[in-house]
Image 1 (cartoon, rainbow, N blue to C red):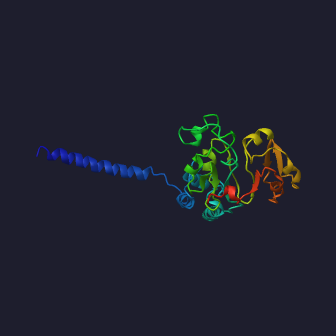
Image 2 (image 1 turned 90 degrees about the vertical axis):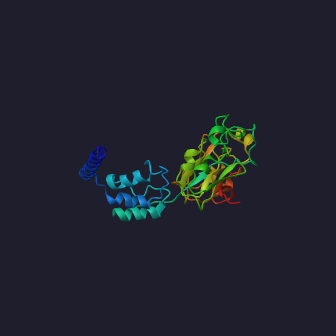
Image 3 (image 1 turned 120 degrees about the vertical axis):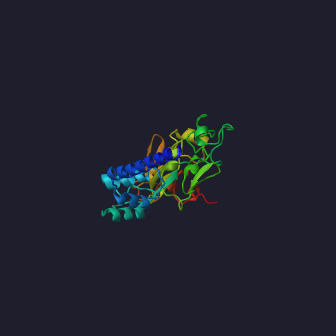
Length: 270
């Protein structure tokens, strides 16, 4: 009997504590709008942060509670925006799918290596040693940090250069964030002309380290009838608000550093 009573007391205390916790949880319960969970289920759960929020859950909460725009999810694209708009009873507005573009042509056939790198096989590590082993210090480092973070397997490394499979890319931007040389950008999928180079060196230097780099000759600028491309800091840059994708800049480029997307350089499949 001397052990029974303490056990009963502890059991009673446990029951009372449980009841008190249940009551407290009901009294202090913070009710949430069910639309937050519904919107969160629609979002792709990539948690890339391209919408400007810390993750899909945070974005869903901000849509419901703070009136955030419903069309900010790049990976979800127009279809996701339409579903969220329907849940919120608003207009989705215009939204275009996005895609990653590797602004470099420096594969193994275009640029040589200046030393053999034997350190940790990541772009971030290699970049700490004289901006990588390639002669061009603005080139793709080729170790696949971008491919490692891609949730859809849309990036692969071929001949020392990152390649994007357009059919798999969702435009989340995680690859761009992972690239230490900042040569990957995210753009509107409909603007299908790209300057596939990131070097701001003068033409003579570019020629000496890469066969396919932009040399800043301005022929593209002269051929464009829409004032959509200009050479700034020795590198051709496209104003996509003006570009009509006519392709005349690509045709004029002697180094073939300007290309239409969908060509071999951007396709991961062999």
